Length: 637
Image 1 (cartoon, helix red, strand yellow):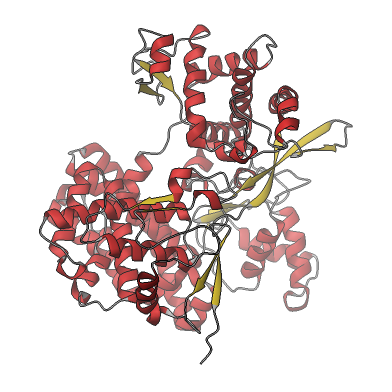
Image 2: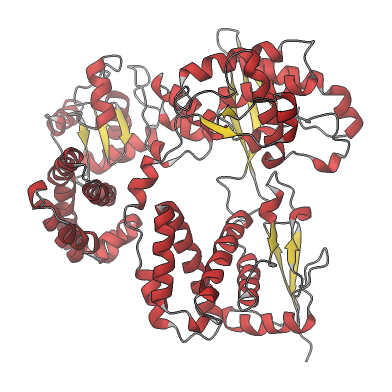
């Protein structure tokens, strides 16, 4: 019987994979597929020679994106012999799933390689011989190094066992169930405490001054001027370094403003917010005069090299690069040039051998590179900012200057969790930028679909007065009502609520220090919320409980007191009212209807009684009665 070959395109790479001797494929025949590939010893990709028995699989030649090459290589030589096939099977199946980015698979591969070494050292030589207590001990060992490493190891192990259970015979149901129950307590709080810091002004200001001098100095080395321009661009735009290295000379556009001034926009490629690999989206961001000048300098100083190489990339690196296939330059390769550049800045301001507390938030990198030691015989350390810190700095500066977070989210392309909410300035002429959000919110309020929670301040009465004064009919004129109200009532989306000005036609005094405080700490009297925001409030409460446990463990009594007070405040003012209203809506519409309309609430709805017990436990939490036993209990309710 003739079989039809099934070919799938691997989105990570410019590769296709054809299933050998299979007319169809499913999760159930993956073990047969692996056995077939083992017998053939040839992994059927349309390009390259990949053999199952190879000690390494190198996919770095088959991606068109600016990804670090070492993230595309899988070296199995260091893997224990007992588990090398299991690890190869996992990597291959994860690639063929075509869901995770290759960088993520590579991280899992490295973490699992370490885990299997631990297993073999503990006399486990097959997957079936690894009991949960060994996995637990391994994760606790990682926790001793860092909670972040524990979480990463847990995620990789879960991913492996999920793949293993789905595709192969597996007698370890009990162990697997225990693995998926395992939680890394305190991870969210630790992650928030370890966020990349902003660049301090006493470093940023002289650094930018030096970059500007070097960029504009025709006597300086071309490569040094180019790196100075690179730093100017990422400092002003917040672009990731890989995105900046991928910019081409055709990426700049301009537009005339109403005052006859010209605004410049930069198109760039990003793959951070795009699923799959070797896929990217083109985003646009505004660039100011400084970054426009840096762009023009890069266009000019590399013009001849660009013509010779036949490439359009803005940044071309040093003169040593003569192969067009080496572009765009990846961030790992670029790092050495950056270190050399920053060391040279010592003639402008101190960066070599400075005290650890000279620039708060800037790491002092210990220098081992011979070319630097030859140039600076006494060098021991260099104060080196992380490239991502320039992104943090750009976001922070925009936010502090009142730029709406919605704008920042869009033009920074995939912000960190700390800036997922957005803040929008309003004015009488343009009360809000997200009119659709405002009209949708008002429609639910006016039609009585949701109950407005929080201090009403007469808002509902004023909406009713507006409807009556204009002789509107709610049933027939709802769209016109909400469109008119949206122009009069400033509405800003906030994390876990909405800011609604109860006084129509009057903007919030955004420049007043008191109102800046209100917005920053979510204590503004204009903050309202609805039952469908209960998942956000629940998450906030859970994270506070984790933080309380960490601070109690380390004996930070004052902080525990503050966080318990914050927890009670969230429960009393947000979580419990939302939870009660959720119950009313469930009684009114039923579980299926609520989940269909608000899919983010599925977990809350299905675990309603279990979560209610948690809330009751949290409400009765008093600092004087806290102990580790009780904290352990409320963390797993």
